Length: 197
Image (cartoon, rainbow, N blue to C red):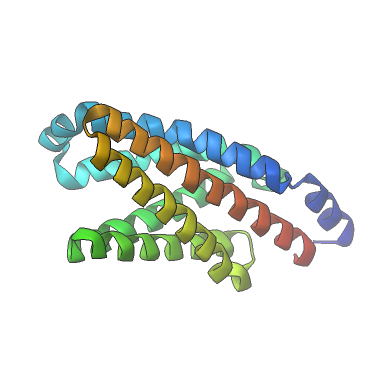
């Protein structure tokens, strides 16, 4: 990429503030939709889709809805459908790491290791996709903090309130935090890629 194109891409990268706001608000809506299916249809989904099928359906919902929200934060060369493919790969890697660790270890240890594994895998995929492999650990760390904060705060709220309202609040908190992390990661990955690409 020549200097003129790099400069144009860097100028087109949304600000960190916009990325955080769009990521957190947009992804909280996405997460609320997904967690609503858990709150209102979890048993039915397990019955008709099985455990693996239900988790796959939730992952697909996050990809379809989340990719649409987050695509507004990517510069022109990454627009749909290319970003959808990258986000799908990143989110499926995240889900595989998270669910795999959780089902092997169970309990709180499984949740923490799942959050770490999922965040690392998602960060690696996004870093590779944006051509900033050297930033993979930094991006993964941002995702781990955001993901863990949203998941565990949301879980505590759910445990405290319970029922459908607790599950919906969990989804809202998870989406706000992970969405902010994803917005930040997209900003920094693109800004760095535009500077060095």
